[in-house]
Structure formats: C-alpha cells, structure tokens
Length: 503
Figure 1: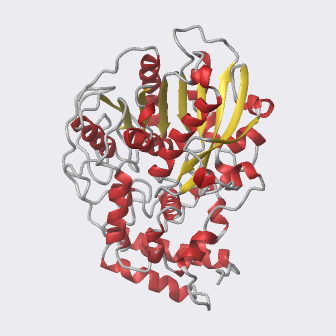
Figure 2: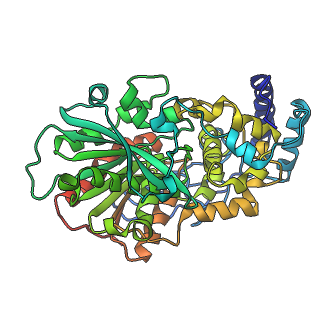
Figure 3: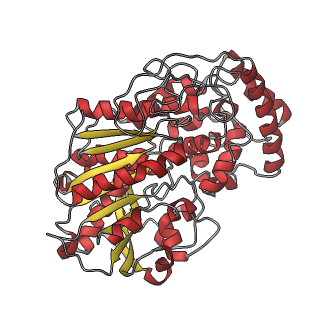
C-alpha cells in the first residue's frame, strides 16, 4: 500500500519543532566530557597536538578540537547545536531518547494505514526518474554484461565547456555495467574531460579521477547531470569552487568524474561508490584502449568524495585487481571514516540534515535499516526530500532533528543493526590497493581528525605507504588549506615519483 503524503510538510514542521525543543532541553543540562588531546607530530602547519575536549574546546593548532576523547572517540562529543551533537549524552541519546518518538507521534498522528511492506517502502524512497534514460534505465541484458562494459555514450562538450576553465578536446559521458553494494547487477555513469593540449610527458596521458562530493539523494545532484544540462536548480556549486579539475587540465591530465552514488543515489555507501569508480575506469579504458589503456591513474576526493575514494582503494585488490599496477595513489580529506563517531558528532545538530540523508542513502542499499524507521521517518524518506541535493540537505539540519526521532526502537544508533552497518561501512578489514595521502582539518567538529588519523594508522598496519597531514581549520577551511598539498602529492605520483611513507 503506498504511503500517503498528504499534509506532510505541516506534520514535518510540527515534528521538527517538537524534536528540537526536546533535544535542546537535553543539551542544556548535559555535562561535557573533557580530556587531553593526543599529541601529534609536527606534520603540517603549527605545533603539536592541542588540549582538546569533546565539546570543541582547546587551543587552535593541529590538535583536533573534537578528538579529545581519550583515543577512541567514545566520550560525549559536545552538546552545542553547532559543534556537538544533540543526539549524544542528551535526551536524544539517553534513556529519555525512547520517549521522543512517542511524543512526536502524539503531536503528529500516524497515518491511518498499515505500514507498507519493506520492499514497497524501499522502492518508494528511491530517487525519482529524471526522464533521461542515460540516468534512469537499467538496460536489458545487464546481468550478462561484464563489469565496466560500456552500455551507452554521449558527447556533452558544448554544455560542459561553460564549467571548465581550459580548452578541451572533448567531454564525453558514458554508462557502464557495475554492481550494487551486495553484488547485484547495476550501472554507473561518469564524465571524461580530455584537454585540448596534447600530452607532452612520457608514456600515455595520465588520468585524475576526481570524486566530487555529491552529498545528495536525487539523480539531478550528480556532476554528469550538470555537465550535460548546464546551470540548474540542483547543480552542486561546491565543485565550481574546487580547483581539482582545472589543475589537472593545466597539467594535461584527463579527468574522470564518476557519479559515484550509483543509480539509487546511495549517498555515503562506500561499496557502491567503489564499484562505480572502478567500473567507470574500466569503461574509459574500453572506450579508449589506445589512449588510456596503459595510463597511470590517481584519485582525489573530499568529504563525501573521500567516502567514495576510500571505498574504491579498499576494493581494488578484490574487485579490480587488473587496475592495481596503474592506480598510483589516492589523496582524500575530510574523511567520514568512522560512521559510529559521526553518530555522536553530526546527529541532531546543524550537520544533522546531511547525517540523516546519509542514513536514507545507505538504507537504499542496506534495507536491513528500514525496519528501524518509524512512521514519521517513512514519510520523510518518501517525501520530496528523496530528490534533494546538498544545499537543501545542509539547511535541513537547522531544526536539529536527531535520528532517534525517526526510529521505532530506543537508542537506534546503538542497536545491533547500526553496529553492523558501522562495521561494514568502515571496511577496516580491507587494505588499500594504492599509496595514500590523508588530510583533515584540526578543528573539525563534525568529522573529527581522529577518524582520519585512525584510518591512516589502520592502513599503515597493513603495510600501505601512507602520509597523514593535519591542517588548521574545520571542514570548509580544511579543504581550502589542504587541497593544494593533496594535489601536489598526486601530481608527484603521476610524474612517476615513488610514494613516500610516514608510517
């Protein structure tokens, strides 16, 4: 039975106010856990680690203001609406958290219909079709295709040129066979930018795989949609401010821009992202065997793009081992490497809109989450929210609705299902198939540097050649100050210099 949408925004508004009042009340009386931040080598700007606290108190420096939680990030990560989660050590995360759904339900009556079957709910919460078969249609015969097999191509050079700084020979989009998070047949799309300048370096023209932080739930949020259709209400303005593609063009590199969330727009799901990236690399080589069949490749990503890049490098050896010798490195920053930690730092505050969007995105591929979503959460998941992009989803954090308000079990973020999802998304049992450069803002209060450092140490333990850099700033400033070092490291790998290791 379809979920009824009537009056949704009125109900959601009341629910948002109710949840915010309850969560805010819990925040006011919560003690803040404090401890000393861990000392760091002087690997970037500033001195050693600072004295930090879970609430974001401490000296400005490479030491993270939010990783002062001993060493494992388990203490309260703050209680302010900006730097800490109202979903941690507050009404939303304490025993009072079990009251919230009931109180919301008393203010917002549940619809007078039986809950839909989970498969019906999953189908209804998928992104709406765009009316473009390139993005919408699963072609016949998909199961019999090889991963990376090209399904469709199109040239978008005239439209895409308005977003590119330098002259280009061509901008081509293609659709390839891929697999979803559990290995079922799927597809992936991507855009390839080839500069007009001939490659003057040794060997074949290198390729930089630029994993844009899509951070959206709708298919119109993808970079390929914007590059094919021009300026539109759904376009991701973040990429226009990032210099990755322009820098690569200046050096004569080709740039591959994958739509790494897959056709279900599984925001924050690393297996879908990794499969999409590796299969679009395969597709590019299938289209241009002479030009890119032996090219050296490197990856970059930030924030949501770093989820994708991290997933891809951890899947190289098992999913695309034939690419291992040619992928010479990956650089990514602002890494959401530990989703359990993010449940304490992003839930119920200004980052909560993106956190909830990630929960919905992952549940599109991991339906075991769906039984935990209450009626209010179901209405939200099938509402127009399911097609929103990063701008709208970021503003959705203003009401401060914690995930617990949309769950039908107490302490949902501590449930066995959640713990299983955390473990799968972390991919901690997988070794990167290429050297790594990892960076993070030292004053990150939503995506703490502790998670990035733990990822660095994890991969060092596997023998991966890796470098970690901590730069001043929170999420946005961390990208601005860290991107140049990351690109220089990538540039050196594509020039053939061996990767250093600081493990």
